[in-house]
Length: 170
Image 1 (cartoon, rainbow, N blue to C red):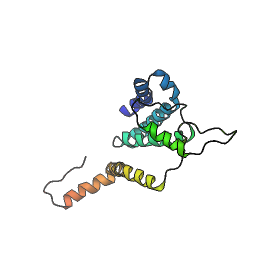
Image 2 (image 1 turned 90 degrees about the vertical axis):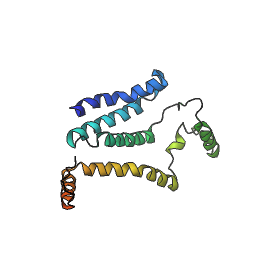
Image 3 (image 1 turned 45 degrees about the vertical axis):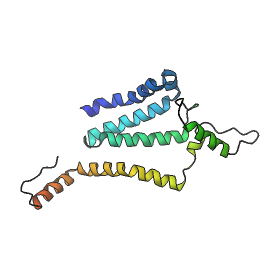
Image 4 (image 1 turned 60 degrees about the vertical axis):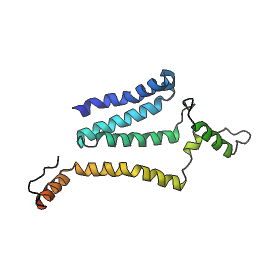
């Protein structure tokens, strides 16, 4: 029943978080991102909880939400990138802008976030993959553990090892 109630709140949470941090006006500026994050999370949350079970609901939903945001940000960028006053990333963006060639006459300059849309070097992709690897492994193992076949195998294994008592794996 919870898997049928929570998705409604999941759509609202990104809007609420951005409004609490940056205010209502800034929330209106990024409403496509809030809607994408909330809706993708809610749909996957509903489907996994009702069709698979409670084991991986939030892990799978958050992964789907992240992927949906990556796809959205490939095609859409907010007009202005909001930052905290002491955020050091501004210098990194200025340095990247200095390295980029400027637009020729009649061309439009790239908007905010244009550098983020460019392809990552191979070493950065490898580092990103390695950073995500523990979470990918966790999700796969929890998913496998949630299947009846894995539970049966683990129950049989505990009996086969003669541990004295049968351990029922929840």
